[in-house]
Length: 453
Image (cartoon, rainbow, N blue to C red; front, side, top):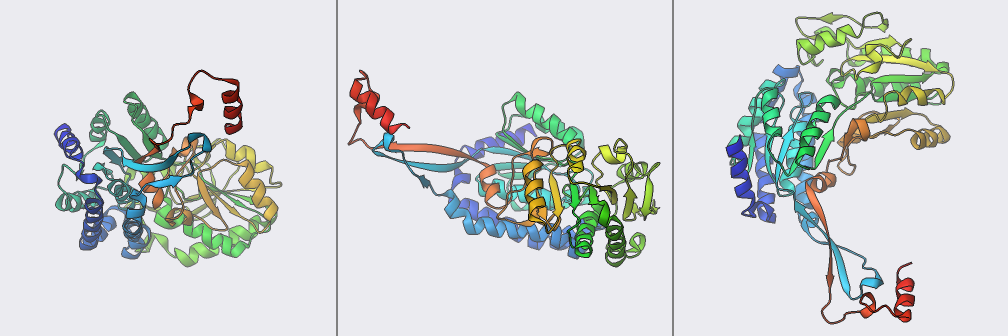
């Protein structure tokens, strides 16, 4: 691995990756490779997660292709200097920002969306002009192997390469000195990545997780609310970093909401244990973890499971105690706790116990409630009257805050994430104002105070 990184450092120092034509061609190569390997990717993700071809395209391949097209369209503009206003105190001069690649980038990706969360950061790193080593998850081994085959057949290893292996491989990679590290995964591992990066003062993006709440106000359109919650929660069998983790619902509409949730589960995930389009839990370890969360809990609906298929039904749970494993850990599965509140002020203490969630979802038609929630709760991003769709928008950055992450990406934000923004002033050689030079006369003092206020 060290030899590959040395080769990438040497290649980056040739400055070839910084050229517009080179970046553009690399993005097109990646796009063509994904299209060529699409069948293999579909087969692999079905083996790893039982994910259907349609869901794979909607939540993974299609989003990556969309981001590549976005980067291709905006690449030339992003690479140009961006002029900004120069203050009169710096007369005569021009000011501009320019974006320069960091250099040698490490991307560590997770198993839950193994195509999207491996390749979309890669797209941004390529567009920004870096070299990349990608370490995909050892849990989604079939997809990791296909991605490795695809990338290593498309690019030379001194530019972009994939290294697979167990967690010890990731640890070994983190011991190297990188110019940038991009990590997607759990908060605990994210802290270890941050600690390793800090030893070399390496900048990072950490896309983590947390317990993302859904708040359902009494003014919400309950049936549509339930439909959209069911979609966002049970997509990928709840194994989504921004999946609704638990519901806080006004007591006045709790029964109506539960009835609608059950209705839409039966429509969208009918006979889920035998439904060929219902995603399985990634492995036995996570399957058993999820089942342990059901101990001593009041199940409202669902709760059945199939060990051989590693599937758990969409399950609704009535929350009575916030100190259980169900309510203190990120669930990352098809279990949906529900708690009713009497007053909107009750929810603040509940959410702050798991502070700074990656996402928050508010269902309301009351603009005052909307303003109050947005003003008083810190979270990464989210939706009003929908779930999870904010992460699929190129015009919006996606990322967490505090415990849920550092930095953001998607679309133009990806280009900026993998670039260092340089601030530059270019001064004229024809005029040189004497104000800044000593001796400081009374006139100079007056003029400085006039310019700098």
